[in-house]
Image (cartoon, rainbow, N blue to C red):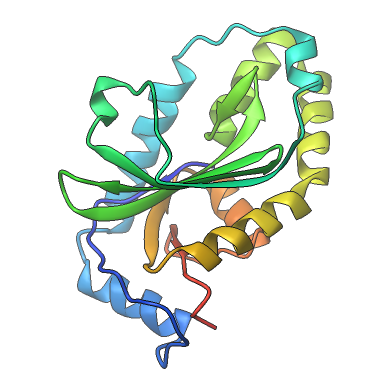
Length: 207
């Protein structure tokens, strides 16, 4: 469910916007031509290779009896641990609801906003659908994976509500490359529009 981008955007403030979401997305993609299908495809390949190679240790109970959180939103959350490759990412807002988590952050190195949708899997939160599927299937088989997936998708209303709450608290648009077609579909189902494999998390001031 990961999304990431290498582009820049600026705060837009509260209030209704005369520019529609579709107009914003079209203008953004036209102005940032380096976000081309070839670049996105290569980035998706690299993400899948990276996250499929990581080792996660968890029990079947961890997987199928994970905690279902009440809605909580944390602004300017403190991240006590982060990979060295991610230390330039400053969390702006983080929220959890049900089995879902959304983190919005700013890249202090390149000065752009981004967001990640993660889901409870393997005793923690993970974002890449294909990598999660490969991992669970290799450990416990396809039937267990389908059981977990059904449980997660049954909780989709929690993600929709979480997206709404995050949108109410941001004052900028966070565009982000989806890590896969599955991720793009999930974004659309959660109310996050996607164009050319770039998902756009809009503040609630947009229609």
